Image 1 (cartoon, rainbow, N blue to C red):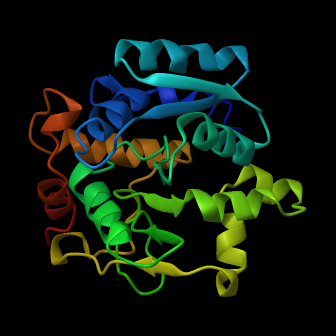
Image 2: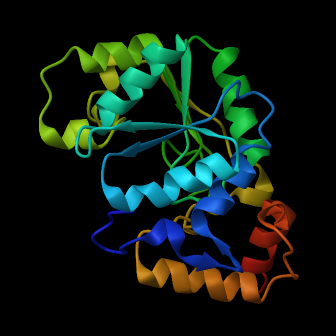
Length: 223
């Protein structure tokens, strides 16, 4: 909620629903996620997120404001998790099919970290529909290092800065989502206005589940 570029963005309206509603509603459709935990901080403004998590019957975890890595480490320890799936709360169009796909890929591979949430390593993915998957062992390895504040705030940044220390993998985007220049995450007011306009021009959406990502992307790429 405390974004400097777009304050209180998780409560902002997108096609009739708060952004946090989009994220939780769509994430709950994943079949390969055993448990969802909304990780937030102690700031009072985040009470809104906790209330929404309760509404969705999703567990919340309240941790450090600046040390986001510690939140993940504590959740992994509390839940005795072997694998952690990270879904960014500013990705309202996260797609459960793509999230399950990267989880399945990780489970079948000998990797520390897998992703399909951004276009990188030539995977050609559209930005904002997938997730990151990291082993608890790799997360613990990061947590045991003497890190500066930037790495503590951005959970997987250390992996990207030290790719030689980790086994990293990604999937090739399906043709329907192979548009790496398109961003569907919300960081700024311009991002929000773009998605609002795009969804307004899309078919009527009765709930976030009704937004089929392949059809939506097709509507964006029509010439």
